[in-house]
Length: 141
Image (cartoon, rainbow, N blue to C red; front, side, top):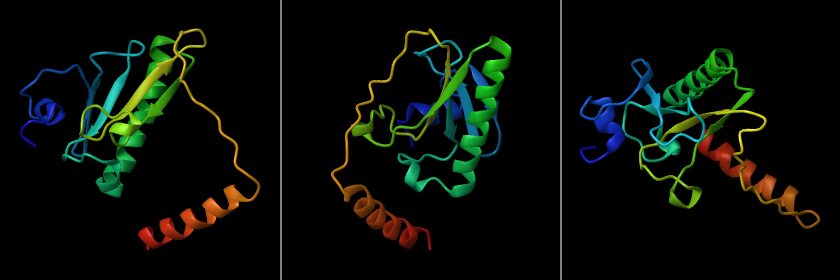
């Protein structure tokens, strides 16, 4: 896509600190990292949503992301890493080219996710799980 910043990075029109590249994915350091080493793994084909990424490419994104996370832990002595993918603006996606964040984490790095925790009413979780199960099975078959 002509105006997509990530497509321009892949094309070499905008510089990036490349971490990894193969025929399916491109990984580079985030310019506004949560912690140093924070990397983005993107499909080379333009996809706004993770839902449209071919299964092989999506699998490669997560495999590469995990390997980068392990490399970050070993090289820079981080304690752990997060793999994070936001799909859509309501989920926090800012660049409309699907991307997987690999965020190195330390026990005392000062970064905290603001997760809230709701509680299901009696029987509601089972009902929702049944409905989702049917929809997912229909979509995957």
